[in-house]
View 1 (cartoon, rainbow, N blue to C red):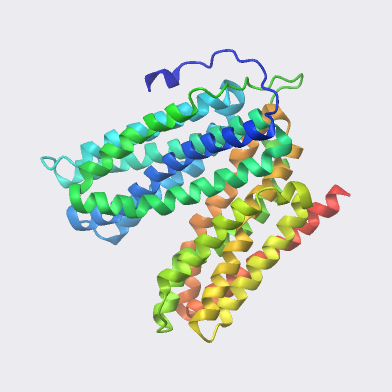
View 2 (cartoon, rainbow, N blue to C red):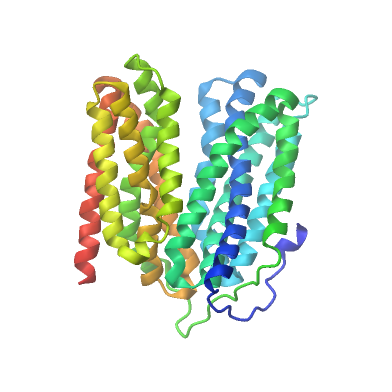
Length: 404
């Protein structure tokens, strides 16, 4: 994988792919993203156990070890976008795979029992940081490369498939990581994380590179990128509040309510999210991206309100499924708006910055919602998520008004 650091070879512009070929390309891009996110899910599932049970650190250090990856992802979104815009999307993706592979090597160093706890924690921190940078480069590089190959009119479909692959990788990676950890300790997890990027590279190796866009004005200043991205990103962040409260608190809510089926609540959310991404991937282009975003935020709000007021478990399950369905198409629907408004020379930076809004929302929602839950109970956090989704509808209405 060392060649990923080399400059991109000159590439001719790629014409938008025909329908059958476009689907084949999407499958390959999505498979690569799935493998990259598989490593993230594996790492995330085993790090708390390793830091707490094996290294013997308390919960604050556990939280640090878990959260440092997300922080690295947020802080490198701009860097990943600039890499895709200036060096080429293929270079960004390949460098991301390199960072993911290096994170596996650093995790392998963590697994060496001859080391004291402090250096092992240090090696694990390096692994998590590398994985965060790798995630940022892989996702931004894939989105930019795929849109370059398939054409901007299919950007919603690209984002739908990519998002489903991300979610699927996380979902499969967690149990896979725990199974490997139980049978091989951290060593097996580390080795697989180091090897999977090689498979991902092979999956996309024959896809033609897309040359960085060269326009007379060049790339936009970052301040202009922020102006383009701000309203779509804000609506995405408000959607992310509901996403985060379901992931963080629905199990605790079910337990506090003495209901069975807490795991089913997460499954209902996840299944609805992925299924609608796959079934409705083309709805934003066909029905209007802002119309779909507005309706989706409304459905998410209704689902979260149902969870908030549910008197019985099955209504809460229905609410989580509605929330998952509502959250599903918001990223691609609003992402289309970013692609429409950003010049091709700044597409990677714009998409990376746009995704960072959701990253930040998810990072902040956990502790803030926890502060709400302490005095008001778990129900209140779902009301907060619903209100955030309603605020997102208002932001989308502002976007629609600005377009007129």
